[in-house]
Length: 140
Image (cartoon, rainbow, N blue to C red):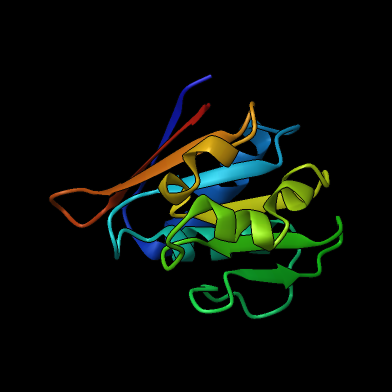
């Protein structure tokens, strides 16, 4: 179920976020691919807002995982940019998060290729020549 969204400006991200969640209503693990500065964290902020997260959303670069309370239960935001081995992800209990039935948004999933659960949604964000963002999503 491949889908694409074009976000000409940051203010267009909430519509794309709501559309993505509606397109994949039963999926809970979303994997975010894109170059540094492509807008992964910014898009995850929009997704969290769509889920009713009131807390400030920021990249968990140093903590590896942030938990945000929402109306639908906790939302987990991971950033694996700094990890060196998949073992580090196992040490924080990544499998428990992935199979918790709560939303998990993962930046830099390419660092944990063997730990990705079946049915996860791959979200690729690319910067276009006009600085808009093309967001492509498909199940893994």
